[in-house]
Image 1: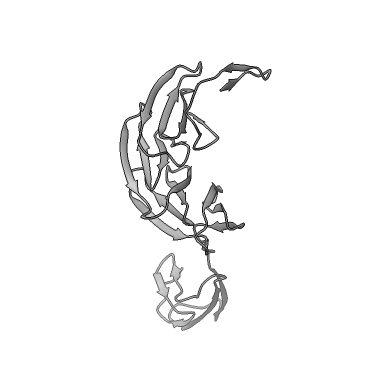
Image 2 (image 1 turned 120 degrees about the vertical axis):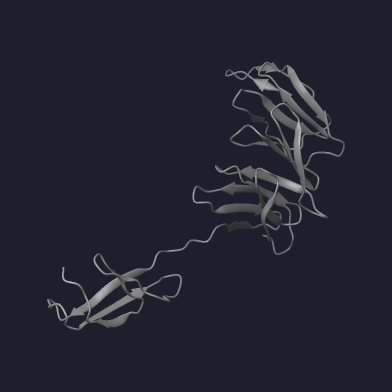
Length: 231
């Protein structure tokens, strides 16, 4: 049903015996989409039905909308994609023995899907799998997923836990020139270079000493050069 700003009911429409997800979604053109039992609905803001799909087995999530208006919905073990006009674009089988329980979409239109067996998957807008991971140790149903602006994700499961996962961060290494001797020097003399580097989340495997005149000088922490150009 729709409610006015003063709390009065504007209209009510039947949606079947049950609602797969308590939250409808609204498209950029103000179309309201919701799923109930095995029906998928699109309505105008005044409640007028635009289209209705009878998909057979019950939907297991409510719809989610991508940046381009494409609709994604969980239909048992399948993730399905629909146009705003209600035409099926593709369907992708995510689980052999579980069902889809939650869907969220990031700013790049990647669809993240939680399932009843404790897995999260990432699917491209074209319907191909990017990755799949087991989130819950006990294969507990994932109830919801949220995405942070840095790409990290959080999932609530029926095992009573909140899980955090997502892309790993990679902190840049830092480098310090310890000494250059002799300094100053003259052309043709041997110059000893010493440097050090640190990597908080990795291991230093090489260095990159470069000159604006001679280009790369060395990939070692310590080295000597006697053929440096003047400048």
